[in-house]
Length: 335
Image 1 (tube, rainbow, N blue to C red):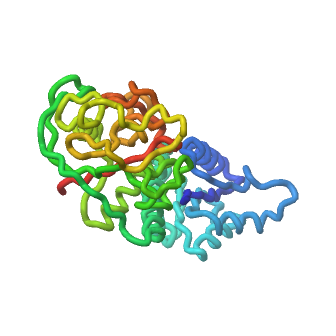
Image 2 (image 1 turned 90 degrees about the vertical axis):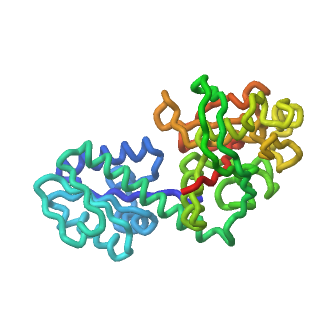
Image 3 (image 1 turned 180 degrees about the horizontal axis):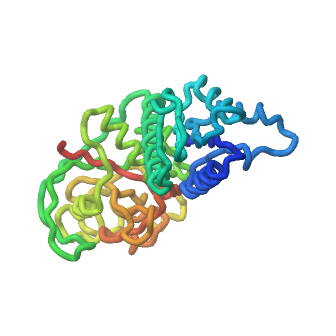
C-alpha cells in the first residue's frame, strides 16, 4: 500500500530553521505522515552518512528548510543528493534568505508568515500525495474497473439531516460498493477473500484519490456521494426504513457472527441498488460538522445491530481511519 514518506532537511545551528523543522515534524505526525529527520532519528553508533542517504533514497518528498547556512555543510549535501535522485523538493524559505533559482523552480514556500507557510506546505503535500497515489493506482490496475451504474432520477424527498423536503438532481450510483476485484491493490479485506465482496480497510482519503484516478482515466466525473445523494438513493425516493424493496432488514447482512462481508445477492432496493443497509459502512463526501478531519459514513455494516443499518443512520470516522467494516461506492454525475 502506497504511503507518503518525507525527509526533513535543515540546519541544526540556525535557531529559526530548527524551530520551523520541529514544527513541521509535529504537523506531519498529527497528519500521520511518515517523516525522518537526522536530529530526531539518528541513533548513536550509526553511520550518519549512510543513514541519511538511505532515507533520502526511500522518501517521496524532501522538505528543505532554507536558512543562511543551507548552502554549506550537511544541508547542502542533502539537497544535492535529493536533486541527483530527482526527488520532489519543497523549499521552505526563511525570511531574508536567497534561494538558488533551480530550487525555486521545484517548490518554493516563503515562511515570512509561518502560519501561511505551514498551510501552503500541507496543502502542497496533499496535492503531491494525490498525484502519487493516482499514479500508483494506474500502475497497479491491469484494466479499468467496470461498474454497473444505476440512473437515479431527479426528485424530492425528506432528508433526515435537515428534517425537511429537499430536491436532488439526477445522478448515477454504482449498484454495489467497490469490490476487491475492481481494485485489489486498494485495500486489504481481511474478513473476506471473495473478489466480489466490498474492499475494506480503505480510508476516506484513499477513496477520494481512487475517485480522482477514475475521473482522470475515464473522462467522467466520479466521486463519493454526498449524504443527501446517498440517503435519496437508499430510500429510493420513498420513506424506507431499510434500503430494501419492502423496507425490512430481513435479508441484509447485519449482526453477522461469522464476521464477514458478502457479495451482491438478492437485497436490492426499489432503485435496484444493493446493500445500502448493512454489509459495510460507506464513506460519503461530507465532513463531520463537529469533529475536525472526520468524515461521514452511512448504512451500517455486517457487525452492526439493526438500528445502525437504517437509511437515516449515520456515523463518522477520522479521514485516515480504516477498519474491516467500512468501504465506499462511487457515483457518476454530469459535468
